[in-house]
Amino acid sequence: MNDIVLEYSSSLSNVQLDRGVVTPTAHLRGWWKNTQDYRSHGPRQARTVPFVQLEYRESWASALQEIGGLLAAYVTDGTISDRTAGNLRERLDRAVVAAQAGREAPALGYLQQFVARMENQVKGDAADLAARAALVAAARAVLRGLQALDDSEGWARPALGRGCRRSPVPAARGRL
Image (cartoon, rainbow, N blue to C red; front, side):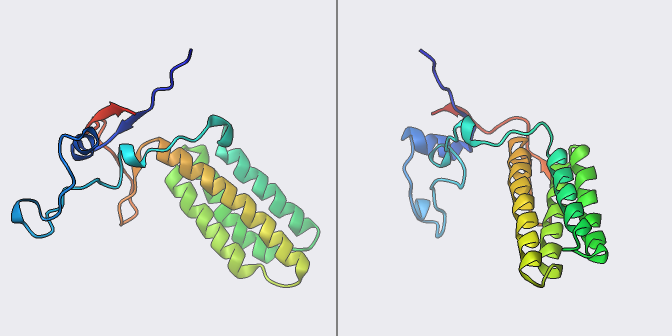
């Protein structure tokens, strides 16, 4: 028989709440808005995703290059103009370089800019809209993969957009 062990990191308050040592309380000890409750991460929020539902790629940079090939095909058949493609290619190339360097956060940003430019600049007849839809769908699939990779490596993204490493020592470890 195989056992599946899920490890998680959580704040100590979440662990104690989960174990029943403390109970959720509003206005703890008479202090207004001093609420003892679950934080936004921890055992209650844990979810499992079967491995077969995850897309695995050796490198997301190769997926970005495939998008570049698709863009080139649309330029060759005249669906997207050279000028528009050059503008799109600039963001895509930066995303490829960042992904090849293992820097998911910048790659995500450049790819999001690529999608925004695509949605803003590629307009016209049904063929143009179909090309835009295909490229945006491919880019969004890569965005999901890069985000999952970035999340799995333990990066926190503060409001200002600069990444910082989380503490290598988790607040608490447990088993579900």
